[in-house]
Image (cartoon, rainbow, N blue to C red):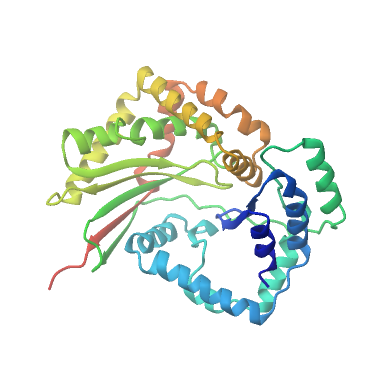
Length: 359
Protein backbone atom coordinates (compact mmCIF):
# COMPACT_ATOMS: atom_id res chain seq x y z
CA UNK A 1 0.00 0.00 0.00
CA UNK A 2 1.33 3.42 -0.99
CA UNK A 3 4.17 2.07 -3.14
CA UNK A 4 2.67 3.45 -6.36
CA UNK A 5 2.85 7.02 -5.04
CA UNK A 6 6.29 6.43 -3.57
CA UNK A 7 7.63 5.35 -6.98
CA UNK A 8 6.19 8.42 -8.70
CA UNK A 9 7.62 10.71 -6.01
CA UNK A 10 11.02 9.02 -6.15
CA UNK A 11 11.49 10.13 -9.77
CA UNK A 12 10.38 13.69 -9.01
CA UNK A 13 6.91 13.23 -10.46
CA UNK A 14 3.43 14.08 -9.28
CA UNK A 15 0.21 12.16 -9.69
CA UNK A 16 -3.47 12.43 -9.03
CA UNK A 17 -6.86 11.18 -10.18
CA UNK A 18 -10.31 12.60 -10.83
CA UNK A 19 -13.79 11.43 -11.68
CA UNK A 20 -16.38 13.13 -13.86
CA UNK A 21 -19.94 12.07 -14.60
CA UNK A 22 -18.68 10.03 -17.56
CA UNK A 23 -15.20 8.69 -16.77
CA UNK A 24 -12.39 8.38 -14.24
CA UNK A 25 -8.90 9.64 -15.06
CA UNK A 26 -5.48 8.91 -13.57
CA UNK A 27 -2.42 10.93 -14.48
CA UNK A 28 1.24 11.42 -13.70
CA UNK A 29 3.60 14.23 -14.70
CA UNK A 30 7.22 13.09 -14.91
CA UNK A 31 10.41 13.69 -16.88
CA UNK A 32 10.34 11.91 -20.27
CA UNK A 33 12.94 9.31 -19.27
CA UNK A 34 10.48 7.92 -16.70
CA UNK A 35 7.67 7.30 -19.19
CA UNK A 36 8.26 3.54 -19.28
CA UNK A 37 7.96 3.30 -15.50
CA UNK A 38 4.62 5.11 -15.61
CA UNK A 39 3.33 2.86 -18.39
CA UNK A 40 4.25 -0.17 -16.33
CA UNK A 41 2.57 1.25 -13.22
CA UNK A 42 -0.69 2.01 -15.02
CA UNK A 43 -0.75 -1.44 -16.63
CA UNK A 44 -0.37 -2.94 -13.17
CA UNK A 45 -3.15 -0.71 -11.79
CA UNK A 46 -5.46 -2.05 -14.49
CA UNK A 47 -5.08 -5.68 -13.38
CA UNK A 48 -3.22 -5.94 -10.09
CA UNK A 49 -5.18 -3.81 -7.63
CA UNK A 50 -5.37 -5.42 -4.19
CA UNK A 51 -8.66 -4.67 -2.43
CA UNK A 52 -8.97 -5.56 1.24
CA UNK A 53 -11.05 -4.24 4.13
CA UNK A 54 -7.88 -2.84 5.71
CA UNK A 55 -7.32 -0.69 2.62
CA UNK A 56 -10.95 0.23 1.97
CA UNK A 57 -11.99 1.44 5.42
CA UNK A 58 -9.47 4.32 5.67
CA UNK A 59 -10.35 5.37 2.10
CA UNK A 60 -14.05 5.31 2.98
CA UNK A 61 -13.32 7.80 5.78
CA UNK A 62 -11.32 9.96 3.38
CA UNK A 63 -14.23 10.12 0.93
CA UNK A 64 -16.75 10.87 3.68
CA UNK A 65 -14.51 13.65 4.98
CA UNK A 66 -14.11 15.01 1.44
CA UNK A 67 -17.87 15.00 0.96
CA UNK A 68 -18.28 16.71 4.33
CA UNK A 69 -15.80 19.48 3.58
CA UNK A 70 -16.69 20.10 -0.07
CA UNK A 71 -20.45 19.50 -0.05
CA UNK A 72 -22.10 19.17 3.35
CA UNK A 73 -20.31 22.27 4.70
CA UNK A 74 -21.05 24.28 1.55
CA UNK A 75 -24.65 25.46 1.08
CA UNK A 76 -24.03 26.21 -2.62
CA UNK A 77 -22.82 22.66 -3.21
CA UNK A 78 -25.80 21.21 -1.33
CA UNK A 79 -28.18 23.26 -3.46
CA UNK A 80 -26.36 22.16 -6.64
CA UNK A 81 -26.99 18.53 -5.71
CA UNK A 82 -30.69 19.19 -5.24
CA UNK A 83 -30.94 21.14 -8.49
CA UNK A 84 -29.18 18.35 -10.43
CA UNK A 85 -31.62 15.83 -8.99
CA UNK A 86 -34.50 18.03 -10.14
CA UNK A 87 -32.98 18.72 -13.57
CA UNK A 88 -32.48 15.06 -14.47
CA UNK A 89 -35.47 12.95 -13.48
CA UNK A 90 -34.29 9.72 -15.08
CA UNK A 91 -30.66 10.02 -16.15
CA UNK A 92 -27.77 9.14 -13.77
CA UNK A 93 -26.44 12.69 -14.09
CA UNK A 94 -28.93 13.40 -11.30
CA UNK A 95 -26.56 11.63 -8.89
CA UNK A 96 -23.58 13.42 -7.30
CA UNK A 97 -20.22 12.21 -8.56
CA UNK A 98 -18.91 11.51 -5.07
CA UNK A 99 -22.16 9.77 -4.12
CA UNK A 100 -24.64 10.27 -1.31
CA UNK A 101 -23.18 9.85 2.17
CA UNK A 102 -25.33 6.82 3.02
CA UNK A 103 -24.15 5.07 -0.15
CA UNK A 104 -20.49 5.75 0.65
CA UNK A 105 -21.05 4.27 4.10
CA UNK A 106 -22.54 1.12 2.59
CA UNK A 107 -20.01 0.42 -0.18
CA UNK A 108 -19.00 -3.21 0.11
CA UNK A 109 -15.74 -4.97 -0.66
CA UNK A 110 -17.60 -7.33 -3.02
CA UNK A 111 -19.20 -4.42 -4.85
CA UNK A 112 -15.88 -2.63 -5.32
CA UNK A 113 -14.20 -5.78 -6.61
CA UNK A 114 -17.04 -6.44 -9.05
CA UNK A 115 -16.84 -2.89 -10.41
CA UNK A 116 -13.06 -3.05 -10.79
CA UNK A 117 -13.10 -6.46 -12.47
CA UNK A 118 -15.85 -5.34 -14.87
CA UNK A 119 -14.67 -1.96 -16.10
CA UNK A 120 -10.88 -1.78 -15.64
CA UNK A 121 -9.89 -3.30 -18.97
CA UNK A 122 -7.71 -2.11 -21.86
CA UNK A 123 -10.67 -2.11 -24.25
CA UNK A 124 -12.44 0.32 -21.92
CA UNK A 125 -9.56 2.77 -21.48
CA UNK A 126 -7.99 5.72 -23.29
CA UNK A 127 -4.25 6.34 -22.93
CA UNK A 128 -2.93 9.83 -23.65
CA UNK A 129 0.77 10.76 -23.58
CA UNK A 130 1.68 14.42 -23.97
CA UNK A 131 5.15 15.93 -23.93
CA UNK A 132 8.68 15.54 -25.25
CA UNK A 133 8.34 11.92 -26.36
CA UNK A 134 8.85 9.92 -29.53
CA UNK A 135 5.49 8.58 -30.84
CA UNK A 136 7.02 5.32 -32.05
CA UNK A 137 8.44 4.70 -28.58
CA UNK A 138 5.05 5.43 -26.99
CA UNK A 139 3.31 2.88 -29.19
CA UNK A 140 6.06 0.36 -28.53
CA UNK A 141 5.67 0.78 -24.77
CA UNK A 142 1.87 0.56 -25.05
CA UNK A 143 2.15 -2.73 -26.90
CA UNK A 144 4.70 -4.00 -24.36
CA UNK A 145 2.70 -3.22 -21.23
CA UNK A 146 -0.94 -3.12 -22.32
CA UNK A 147 -0.83 -5.59 -25.20
CA UNK A 148 -0.56 -8.67 -22.95
CA UNK A 149 -3.64 -7.66 -20.92
CA UNK A 150 -6.68 -9.52 -22.16
CA UNK A 151 -9.73 -7.58 -23.27
CA UNK A 152 -12.94 -8.15 -21.34
CA UNK A 153 -16.52 -8.63 -22.42
CA UNK A 154 -18.00 -5.32 -21.32
CA UNK A 155 -21.65 -5.19 -20.25
CA UNK A 156 -24.03 -3.28 -22.49
CA UNK A 157 -24.17 0.37 -21.51
CA UNK A 158 -27.71 1.15 -20.42
CA UNK A 159 -28.10 4.91 -20.74
CA UNK A 160 -31.54 6.11 -19.60
CA UNK A 161 -32.85 9.14 -21.45
CA UNK A 162 -34.79 12.07 -20.06
CA UNK A 163 -38.55 12.21 -20.55
CA UNK A 164 -39.93 15.45 -21.98
CA UNK A 165 -40.00 18.20 -19.35
CA UNK A 166 -43.45 19.75 -19.37
CA UNK A 167 -43.21 22.30 -16.56
CA UNK A 168 -40.50 24.51 -15.05
CA UNK A 169 -38.94 23.29 -11.82
CA UNK A 170 -37.70 25.37 -8.91
CA UNK A 171 -35.62 24.46 -5.87
CA UNK A 172 -35.41 26.96 -3.00
CA UNK A 173 -33.01 26.31 -0.14
CA UNK A 174 -32.43 28.35 3.00
CA UNK A 175 -29.36 27.95 5.16
CA UNK A 176 -28.13 29.83 8.21
CA UNK A 177 -24.62 29.89 6.75
CA UNK A 178 -25.70 31.88 3.69
CA UNK A 179 -24.81 35.58 3.78
CA UNK A 180 -25.14 36.37 0.07
CA UNK A 181 -28.15 34.98 -1.86
CA UNK A 182 -27.65 33.46 -5.29
CA UNK A 183 -29.80 32.33 -8.22
CA UNK A 184 -29.24 30.03 -11.18
CA UNK A 185 -31.34 28.60 -13.97
CA UNK A 186 -30.37 25.79 -16.28
CA UNK A 187 -31.94 24.38 -19.43
CA UNK A 188 -31.39 20.87 -20.72
CA UNK A 189 -29.23 21.25 -23.82
CA UNK A 190 -27.53 19.08 -26.44
CA UNK A 191 -23.87 18.13 -26.13
CA UNK A 192 -21.35 17.31 -28.86
CA UNK A 193 -22.63 13.72 -28.90
CA UNK A 194 -26.21 13.78 -27.62
CA UNK A 195 -29.49 15.45 -28.48
CA UNK A 196 -29.64 18.00 -31.28
CA UNK A 197 -25.85 18.12 -31.38
CA UNK A 198 -25.84 20.29 -34.49
CA UNK A 199 -26.47 23.19 -32.06
CA UNK A 200 -23.44 22.49 -29.83
CA UNK A 201 -20.91 24.81 -31.47
CA UNK A 202 -23.50 27.57 -31.84
CA UNK A 203 -24.35 27.23 -28.14
CA UNK A 204 -20.68 27.70 -27.28
CA UNK A 205 -20.71 30.95 -29.20
CA UNK A 206 -23.99 31.97 -27.57
CA UNK A 207 -22.62 31.27 -24.09
CA UNK A 208 -19.68 33.57 -24.79
CA UNK A 209 -21.92 36.32 -26.17
CA UNK A 210 -24.47 36.32 -23.41
CA UNK A 211 -22.43 35.33 -20.38
CA UNK A 212 -18.72 35.12 -21.14
CA UNK A 213 -17.16 37.78 -18.93
CA UNK A 214 -17.54 41.45 -18.13
CA UNK A 215 -18.35 42.51 -21.69
CA UNK A 216 -21.11 39.94 -22.18
CA UNK A 217 -24.77 40.90 -22.36
CA UNK A 218 -25.85 39.60 -18.94
CA UNK A 219 -23.00 41.18 -17.00
CA UNK A 220 -23.21 44.47 -18.85
CA UNK A 221 -26.98 44.68 -18.37
CA UNK A 222 -27.59 43.69 -14.76
CA UNK A 223 -24.20 44.36 -13.15
CA UNK A 224 -22.91 47.48 -14.91
CA UNK A 225 -25.94 49.32 -16.29
CA UNK A 226 -28.79 48.55 -13.89
CA UNK A 227 -26.56 47.68 -10.88
CA UNK A 228 -28.98 44.96 -9.78
CA UNK A 229 -26.40 42.21 -9.33
CA UNK A 230 -22.92 42.00 -7.86
CA UNK A 231 -21.93 39.27 -10.33
CA UNK A 232 -23.57 37.35 -13.15
CA UNK A 233 -22.80 35.10 -16.08
CA UNK A 234 -23.68 32.01 -18.08
CA UNK A 235 -22.20 28.58 -18.72
CA UNK A 236 -22.40 25.75 -21.24
CA UNK A 237 -20.36 22.54 -21.15
CA UNK A 238 -20.88 20.48 -24.33
CA UNK A 239 -18.43 17.68 -23.49
CA UNK A 240 -20.94 15.41 -21.71
CA UNK A 241 -21.64 12.02 -23.24
CA UNK A 242 -25.38 12.66 -22.83
CA UNK A 243 -27.54 15.77 -22.50
CA UNK A 244 -25.89 18.70 -20.74
CA UNK A 245 -27.14 22.06 -19.47
CA UNK A 246 -26.99 25.69 -20.52
CA UNK A 247 -27.28 27.94 -17.50
CA UNK A 248 -27.41 31.47 -16.14
CA UNK A 249 -26.48 32.69 -12.66
CA UNK A 250 -26.31 35.86 -10.62
CA UNK A 251 -25.81 37.12 -7.09
CA UNK A 252 -27.94 40.21 -6.28
CA UNK A 253 -26.54 43.35 -4.73
CA UNK A 254 -27.37 43.85 -1.05
CA UNK A 255 -30.92 45.12 -0.67
CA UNK A 256 -32.01 43.98 -4.14
CA UNK A 257 -34.72 41.32 -4.35
CA UNK A 258 -33.87 38.19 -6.33
CA UNK A 259 -37.19 38.49 -8.15
CA UNK A 260 -36.18 41.89 -9.55
CA UNK A 261 -32.94 40.52 -11.00
CA UNK A 262 -34.77 37.45 -12.32
CA UNK A 263 -37.11 39.73 -14.27
CA UNK A 264 -34.06 41.45 -15.80
CA UNK A 265 -32.58 38.07 -16.81
CA UNK A 266 -35.89 37.05 -18.40
CA UNK A 267 -35.94 40.31 -20.34
CA UNK A 268 -32.47 39.59 -21.72
CA UNK A 269 -33.50 36.08 -22.78
CA UNK A 270 -36.69 37.44 -24.38
CA UNK A 271 -34.68 40.10 -26.24
CA UNK A 272 -32.27 37.44 -27.46
CA UNK A 273 -35.11 35.27 -28.78
CA UNK A 274 -36.78 38.26 -30.45
CA UNK A 275 -33.87 40.13 -32.03
CA UNK A 276 -31.05 37.58 -31.96
CA UNK A 277 -27.33 38.35 -31.84
CA UNK A 278 -25.27 40.57 -34.12
CA UNK A 279 -22.40 39.78 -36.46
CA UNK A 280 -20.11 41.96 -34.36
CA UNK A 281 -20.99 40.08 -31.16
CA UNK A 282 -20.37 36.77 -32.86
CA UNK A 283 -17.03 37.84 -34.33
CA UNK A 284 -15.76 38.96 -30.92
CA UNK A 285 -17.00 35.75 -29.28
CA UNK A 286 -15.22 33.64 -31.90
CA UNK A 287 -11.95 35.47 -31.31
CA UNK A 288 -12.15 34.95 -27.55
CA UNK A 289 -13.03 31.26 -27.88
CA UNK A 290 -10.29 30.51 -30.39
CA UNK A 291 -7.74 32.47 -28.35
CA UNK A 292 -8.65 30.38 -25.31
CA UNK A 293 -8.03 27.21 -27.30
CA UNK A 294 -4.58 28.47 -28.25
CA UNK A 295 -3.75 29.27 -24.61
CA UNK A 296 -4.96 25.79 -23.58
CA UNK A 297 -2.20 24.27 -25.69
CA UNK A 298 0.43 26.16 -23.73
CA UNK A 299 1.06 23.37 -21.22
CA UNK A 300 1.85 19.68 -21.14
CA UNK A 301 -1.29 18.66 -19.28
CA UNK A 302 -3.81 20.87 -21.10
CA UNK A 303 -3.87 19.06 -24.46
CA UNK A 304 -3.76 15.67 -22.72
CA UNK A 305 -6.86 16.51 -20.68
CA UNK A 306 -8.69 17.86 -23.74
CA UNK A 307 -8.00 14.80 -25.89
CA UNK A 308 -8.61 12.35 -23.05
CA UNK A 309 -11.96 13.89 -22.16
CA UNK A 310 -13.07 13.97 -25.79
CA UNK A 311 -12.08 10.38 -26.54
CA UNK A 312 -13.74 9.12 -23.35
CA UNK A 313 -16.96 10.98 -24.21
CA UNK A 314 -17.70 9.80 -27.71
CA UNK A 315 -15.64 12.24 -29.76
CA UNK A 316 -12.58 11.65 -31.94
CA UNK A 317 -9.16 13.26 -32.18
CA UNK A 318 -10.30 14.83 -35.45
CA UNK A 319 -13.18 16.49 -33.59
CA UNK A 320 -10.70 18.11 -31.22
CA UNK A 321 -8.44 19.29 -34.03
CA UNK A 322 -11.40 20.65 -36.02
CA UNK A 323 -12.87 22.63 -33.09
CA UNK A 324 -11.45 26.06 -34.08
CA UNK A 325 -12.68 25.70 -37.66
CA UNK A 326 -16.13 24.62 -36.49
CA UNK A 327 -16.37 27.56 -34.11
CA UNK A 328 -15.20 29.90 -36.87
CA UNK A 329 -17.91 28.53 -39.17
CA UNK A 330 -20.81 29.27 -36.79
CA UNK A 331 -23.28 31.81 -38.20
CA UNK A 332 -25.67 34.29 -36.62
CA UNK A 333 -28.60 32.26 -37.94
CA UNK A 334 -27.25 29.14 -36.23
CA UNK A 335 -26.81 31.00 -32.93
CA UNK A 336 -30.38 32.27 -33.05
CA UNK A 337 -31.73 28.83 -33.96
CA UNK A 338 -29.84 27.24 -31.08
CA UNK A 339 -31.25 29.80 -28.62
CA UNK A 340 -34.80 29.08 -29.78
CA UNK A 341 -34.21 25.33 -29.48
CA UNK A 342 -32.89 25.47 -25.90
CA UNK A 343 -34.51 28.39 -24.07
CA UNK A 344 -37.88 26.82 -23.38
CA UNK A 345 -39.17 27.91 -19.94
CA UNK A 346 -40.90 24.56 -19.48
CA UNK A 347 -37.53 22.80 -19.84
CA UNK A 348 -35.79 24.83 -17.12
CA UNK A 349 -34.80 24.26 -13.51
CA UNK A 350 -34.15 27.21 -11.19
CA UNK A 351 -32.15 27.06 -7.98
CA UNK A 352 -32.36 29.79 -5.33
CA UNK A 353 -30.11 29.96 -2.25
CA UNK A 354 -31.26 32.22 0.57
CA UNK A 355 -30.26 33.00 4.16
CA UNK A 356 -32.30 31.35 6.89
CA UNK A 357 -35.37 33.29 7.87
CA UNK A 358 -34.95 35.22 11.10
CA UNK A 359 -37.30 34.39 13.92
